[in-house]
Length: 313
Ligand code: FDA
Image 1 (cartoon, rainbow, N blue to C red):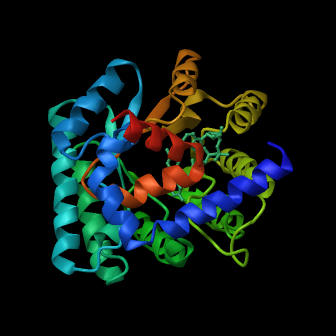
Image 2 (cartoon, helix red, strand yellow; image 1 turned 45 degrees about the vertical axis):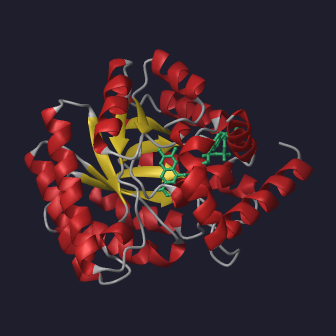
């Protein structure tokens, strides 16, 4: 990407993430979003709709995970209901014999209200997953909750729960040090570039630095014995990591490739056809607004896609 184009994209990304906080925009998008084409990125508003999508992904050879969209819950009852809903999802995945696990956000389970409440909730979900032979991924959110997220992840592991993993974001300066301290746990980590608006005091402002840090993190994780979920749509980075894995003669059971539902479907298929484990992250639920806004910010051209859908009526 040229320097000028990268600068325009970075400015648009920031503008979309800032505009996302506007109540007026939210009301408009909430009202028309599904008609606007949000369904390209979200597998429906109900679990039934999502299960249909997961089944079709499995039938085509993909693994999947699902997330009940929701975040920043500051009501205790709501946070407990979210944990209950995840238990229900896990039971349904088992009943349907789907090759799918769950990925959740700790702020959906009450992290911003009370860390202890979030721990109780996440432990409950992880235990239900263990009983069903399944796995839970803890997504990573904005930089102010990274410490608490890693603390709860470590606590789950220290309490003997191994069917759980988390995420490191390569845009954060701190992630390489976080990885170093996590490696003794032989963790299952997803690596992403990072989707939130972060200040240069905590995150690389230049995309090239984010990309280089991404490769460094995955390589260090693989060398350090971790299981790596390489979550990017960036073909160039994927190929660099695959070449590294070949060079180190790493088995294909040491890593998987993860992409988002609706993003670069041809790349998803190509990677699958080359014999890699490919997991499609497939969220659902009525609270899709912040998720959709992050997807638009990642590729401002997606805004045009939505506008075209609206005009097409
Ligand atoms: P980059 O943005 O450089 O894009 C590479 C290529 O893919 C470009 O051609 C681009 O146009 C295309 N592309 C990227 N995003 C697109 C989109 N939305 N629509 C269409 N094309 C797109 N973040 C986070 O902070 N915490 C988390 O827990 C997660 N979890 C997560 C799970 C999975 C499975 C994925 C794939 C991603 C995440 N992310 C995330 C999001 C991540 O941080 C990042 O914002 C996106 O993956 C976009 O960056 P890329 O790595 O794809 O690279």
